[in-house]
Length: 254
Image 1 (cartoon, rainbow, N blue to C red):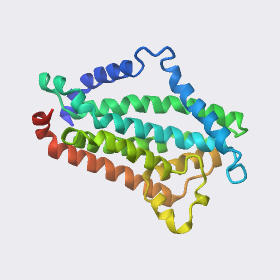
Image 2: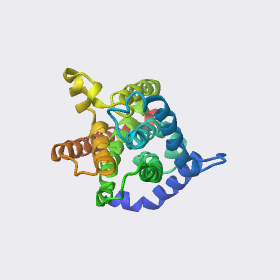
Image 3: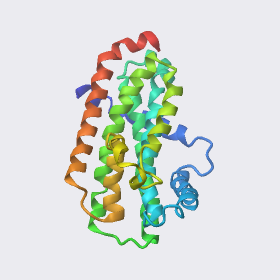
């Protein structure tokens, strides 16, 4: 903990560097963070809202609740996979904790995630959904997915040091992961005997919590909250443990 606190200034500099790199030469800059989910929502709504109009009310909100969480996790973990090799020269020159580069990657994408709430709330209002006290609990699903993604990013950044080909394989994994999360379709179309696969998906539970608060305006089920908490803490602990176990070997491979 002392090491982490002593490195906060360096982490802040990494965050600013990675944030500038994210929007480097982008004409719209941060504004693209707001437009991207809206454009994706328009495309998916045009394609799927007619198909599922009877089973999914307020389809744009339904879609956005899943999209902003999945996009955050997929982008952050994909970037974390190669963050240590990409900063190998800097790691060899400056004696700083290697995990700071992973945390900076997650933090920059977490900033994008928070900004993405604005389009979600605007679309919810235009869809006729009222502002309710349940919206005050929206930070909780964000915290769940942030902890989960941080743990998974630490795990993947470790793997990325030793297995560089994992970058290509992980792209396939995130694609399958996206289809195993009911983002643009209702879970009801999945046969009952296969639904356990969706139950094993942590992101499914995070999405359900966000939809309960924003779309359905109810308190999420205690079972869902318990599973979400378990997944977040499990992956965070696993990521920290694996990273600490192998970090001394990083410099040989970077």
